[in-house]
Amino acid sequence: MKFKLPVLIVLLFGTVSCVAHTVKDGNPPNIIVFLVDDMGLMDTSVPFMTDTEGNLVKYPLNDYYRTPHMENLARQGVRFTNFYAHSVCSPTRASILTGQNSARHGVTNWINSENNNRTEFGPQNWNWKGLTKESVTLPRVLRQNGYKTIHVGKAHFGPFGSEGENPLNLGFDVNIAGSSIGQPGSYYGLDGFGYIKGNKKRAVPGLEKYHGKDIFLTEALTLEANLAISKAKEEKKPFFLYMAHYAVHAPFQPDARFANQYKNSGKSEKAQAYATLIEGIDKSLGDIIQHVKSLGLGENTIIFFLGDNGSDAPLPIIDDYSSSSPLKGKKGNHWEGGMRVPFIASWVTPNEKEFWQKKLPIARNTIQHQQGTILDVFPTISKLLSLPFPKDHILDGFNLENQLKGQKNIERNELFLNHFPHGNHRSNYFTSLVKADWKIIYHYQIEGPPHCELFNLKEDPFETNNLINENPEQLKIMMEILADEIIKKKALYPEKRKEPLKLIMPNVY
Image (cartoon, rainbow, N blue to C red; front, top):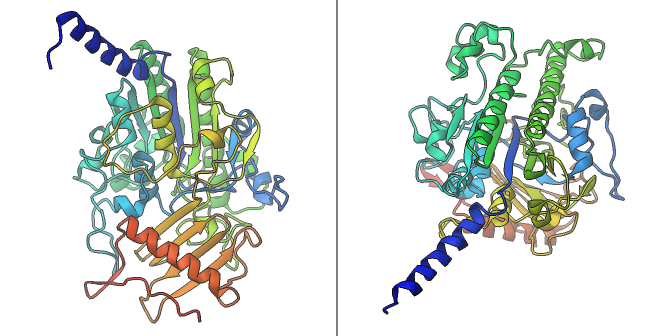
């Protein structure tokens, strides 16, 4: 087909304008994903639990922790009471970046930097090498569409020597302190964050200018994040900040700025130190928000605050209840305390008249009871900005647009699969599935036959009553859905003598 030159120019210009509209017109919003390591649902003064009527309930741990900036963020935005992550860190982190369930992308265990930690019966071909230069990631797609993409803090996307070790390989323009390591060698600048003193194998890279100084790691990362935000503004580019703190992961070293506030709490020294880590995170949140506002960017910046798995606070475990109490279990467990995490979304400075806030309104001081997951961040941002990405890249999450308004997403299936075909953790070799009010956990046949747990989370949110014998019909329904999800996502099973330990359907009749 032949075009006259003027017509061809008009067609080309129209194409460019259409693409540019999604990237440049309307001053694209800045995006902050504020991720806290090992922060569970109860590690905050913000209540996320509700009673049977849907009213917020404060529990003792909410009164112990001090997080005023989280409280303010929740007042001006929406908090989710049923927000799920994977039960350990690397799977969640890879899922946030890819929008895919860990069973699909294959990073099903935390990544040991030095060795393949598939564990004795783990699948041989699990994705130990993590994300690569070829992975479709949210920062890569944003960078391709004009964003300055900034990584600050813990990465943990791949082992030493892998492509995933360096966030710059995954679509980030800037990497501050991110590497393969999953915990800091030390939180203290006087220790060089592990280079001078502490666990030198886990020394935090890239912060040499703070070595030997009396500064806490959380504060140093916050200062660096704010500098990166300022530079993005100077460059007149919208920014995507992935603010991934090392806190509140072990080692539980006290942040002296807040230590006096917990001395008379009656809790152990480690538990007091953990509380200072929590308060330091909250200060970081407040400092970054204030900095964004001071640059005049608040009305055009959206923030997603979340944890990566259940709490690992050093509190006693009594009958399987601990730092996530009243939820059962904690980090690494198959119960709700291992997977439920805080999630708050808000515009930094709410203003319903602002262009992008009209496109994605966020209800104020609102409680969202419908399920949300870590898989939803990618699709929510990509839909807001009409971001193109490869058609063969499957997104397992949902666009949160309606839920952020305080409404229900009627298209959501309310399924969340947590696949952990590995050992050497608090719960070993299991797959769990939440579907709305029901939850099933399948424990693989490592020693003896498999066994299941079945809970009605609406009636029994604290998982006290296993219903497998009382409700065999529901067990059968949930097992069929679980099996279907594993097949759809091409999940790898645990293995014995190199043979996969596939699901064995229970004989319920």
